[in-house]
Amino acid sequence: MVDIKKSEFINGVIVAKPQIFEDDRGFFIETWRQEWLPETRPMIQSNRADRSKGTLVGFHYHMNQSDYWYVSHGRAQVVLHDLRQDSPTQGATQNFKLGTSNNSEQKGVYIPPGVAHGFAAMTDITITYLVDNYYDPEDELGVAWNDPQIRSDWEIDNPILSERDQSNPFLEDIEEYLQPKFQADS
Image 1 (cartoon, helix red, strand yellow):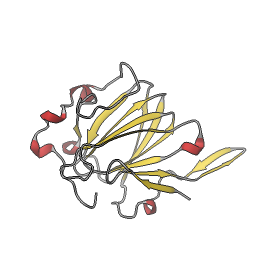
Image 2: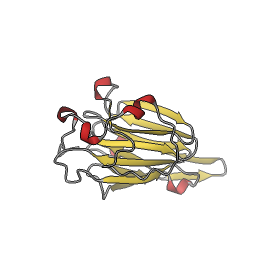
Image 3: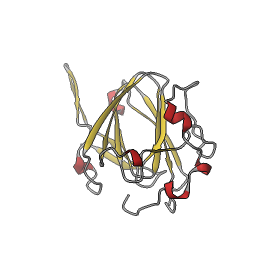
């Protein structure tokens, strides 16, 4: 049985804590089922990223794509920020961990369009993410990982950043047409 919890901080964010089946051989876990979130669009693409300890990815956001993240190896700090204009939780930030060596704490997170998302690899990690839209470079948007308005408390010093993530703009510099709008069904 999966334990589904809606975020208390950001409208539309959902954390799924799946059931784990363990025995002498190890464990088995279903990391995603569409029926867990029947109100969402079907996930149509699966991606995997391996990141070294100290890597920071984000903040990224999409106008037309939802993500579902699951860390299958290692531990990551996740920070989400609601960018959506007119959202009941606009401007809210949520910070939590995904992945662990303790199987009882395994969980995944559903991130709706317009919610900026980033993660820091606290250890070497493998993260899988399902998306409900095919890759569209026009829908790959970003916000500075260290934006003072977001006030994220990253728990790593001197993060390893991609060129893209080093050049993401601050919130105050994002043009109006690139600011996501809240959709009641997101």
